[in-house]
Length: 404
Image (tube, rainbow, N blue to C red; front, side, top):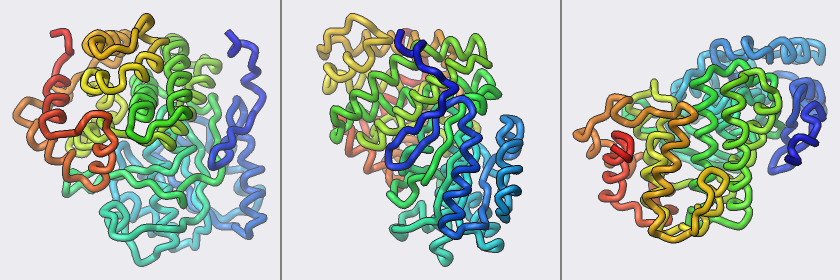
């Protein structure tokens, strides 16, 4: 395979809307990034991160000395948790405003980097709150510069203009998408992902798999989103088992990071539809659910629902996982079962009933999918009409494995 001829220690640049440094040792590029900030007369930064991953991963051992040697003032907001809330954005913004932060460095997976994006907006719009932002009470056109140091291989948030946060009192988990929150620079260093535990490794990778399934089949899909989707599937099928068997396998982590970035680019272009619109209510109601595992529970039924309308695309995209597909509508049940089998082989085995949902919860989940701000935009891009009946059927089929 050609991948074996690539030197993962050679840090390369992925030029998307931003510049992402990909490769083993890419974290050392943080000095170059800080020098670019200094050229813009930026000397005060806020770091947004979780409670411990920025230290456990080894990131802080490089970032802290770089900040100090380059003469940066900094404060840290380290209270971001899984499925972050608008309150966390407000807390981070308060710290940033108090210290006069001119840029934000998000360190972590999707939760810290998405929170950093929200904070970066509020540092420009000092009279606004996280709720104002996610209830879409204003349309931001600017944010302070964002640097993303990525510690997972799933969300793609380091290369895209999306962010997510929960409004807890409403069980709403909206998404936002604005050009002003593309990170200026991002760092994808495989060394920083080796401390992900088995469940995290599975969850973040399944997130990327869902990104491309949707991006390749939305009403706005393009050859670009479809091409990047197929390569993402190929890389995940090849390298996720290796990462699970050998967590320190830097080649596997390198290509999963690359797959995640490709998936981020794919849905930044093709956008998303059913699976994400239906998962957000799940992890809004039960924040303890890993976003990627919620998506994994829904994915087989979503594929079954959309395959007749997107058979040729999905047959092509999923050929590395389910070879021999002909791209005809009658294969919908077959591919759905095969994808679920693959998910189970890599440890993504939980269905909605395992998360504590039952049939009586479905009407509320359907309501949340239909009424949460921004999710209507995703549902409108589905290749099949996202009726309440279709949504309810997907939720019901996802309560348990399809073959039961």
